[in-house]
Amino acid sequence: MADMKTILITGGNGGMGQAIGRYFLEKDPGAFVYLGVRSNRDQADALSAEFSGRCEPLALEVTSAGAWEAAVAMTESAGQTINVLVNNAGHHDDQLMATMADETWQGVLDANLTSTFLGCKAVTRGMMMNRTGRIINIASLSALMAPMGQANYAAAKAGVLGMTQSFAKEVARMGITVNSICPGYIETAALDDMDPETKKARKRGIPMRRFGKPEEVAAAVFFLASDDAGYITGAALKIDGGIF
Ligand code: NDP
Image (tube, rainbow, N blue to C red; front, side, top):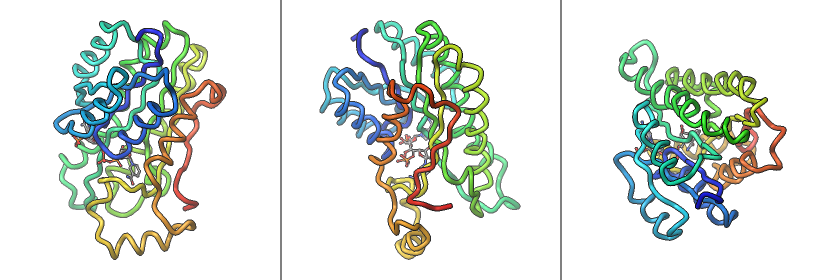
């Protein structure tokens, strides 16, 4: 197990986390995948059963520094160093800013931005000792084109882009790359609160006239985690069917 490439994906029970995990497991026989989970873990358990011995759920409430410490300590006690961290967990809670409750603001900042900060810090020591590592932060197109009603989410995801750039510079000499991905509309549970008419209207605004598939994001994560992507750091990659 120690010889395998160890990948930790937060939000591993969600649509994108599942697709990213499956992509690594199918494309790289040397990949060992930890799927970070909190309350829900049915999908993560199913993927772990399918790839028994190469995939495990890992309890990880990403807003908790203690949970990060415990998760990294668990992997170390199994003789592993995390080689690839995908900060994927996150959620949105849309409200107009003038009437947004303070807790709604803070909750979204914590889940999307502070979580990424804590994750980067937690894995850095191990990656520095290895003189190599890959961190991929899942931001959003909302970081670049903030829509109405997403002041909290857009601010959090824009923060992820800024943090990615700054951190990429700090750890570049240690062989660690840090990049962000900005997905547009991707078909996962995150779009469940959008009604069919709104979905149709949104698709009309996308040059490719369709939403993306989680596998299309997974493919980019896999590339950014590869040796071939060794000179890419601090980047923000849009995956959105051509919205700009
Ligand atoms: P899902 O809702 O399917 O998955 C989100 C995952 O994040 C869930 O597994 C959820 O866990 C987990 N999560 C949320 N908060 C926490 C927390 N505090 N601690 C631990 N886990 C947490 O959505 P996606 O898979 O689509 O989203 C993945 C990422 O992609 C998110 O960061 C999202 O913002 C981003 N994104 C998604 C887009 C889309 O169109 N789908 C577009 C742009 C960005 P649980 O199941 O327990 O709630």
